[in-house]
Image (cartoon, rainbow, N blue to C red; front, side):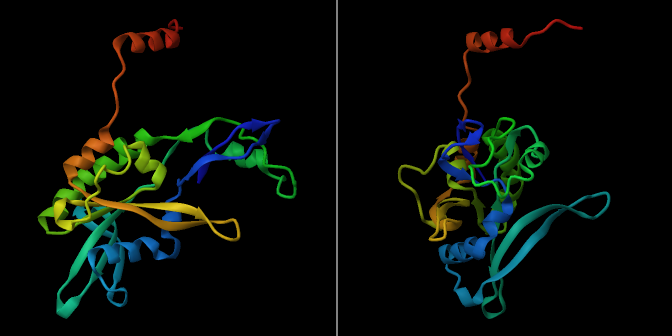
Length: 237
């Protein structure tokens, strides 16, 4: 998890903005996502079944799995099988690796002052997490699940969802209105001051609508590009 902050005499100032989830394990808290999706699709809590990393593609040369569905939520009513897939995407960060940060903060655990300010800039990389990572996954998985008559739930946190445009003006909760169920949990602070995952926004979108959200970016002008380019150009050595 990461949050924006400022340098206060080489110490971390009061963080601002919402925390951003960078570790997929954070989404596993209390099986909240599984229970939430079960409620959305109408599965009773006592009949929910769960499977992790289910292969859906095979390498034609080796016959080994070449693609996995992160999570499958299912039930078996009267001997049948109903299920839906779930794709979970945390956020990558750009900047220096964390080893130097861990080393710099070693031995400060008993220091009552705020933690040392990070020794290098790091920030959430929304573009790599969305258009470069999540979208290709959806483009491969969703059409197949649609063909099989199944929905794909895609899970991102609130800052991630806001970075691609946020909720629709009129969110649709009709499961027949699209191909993907977007689930946007949020981190809330509990009575002990710890972060806890809670249900947030959800809506149904088509793959085409989702693709437009994930690809949303405004091109700059040629003049702006060339101004930046001139600042980066260096002689060949």
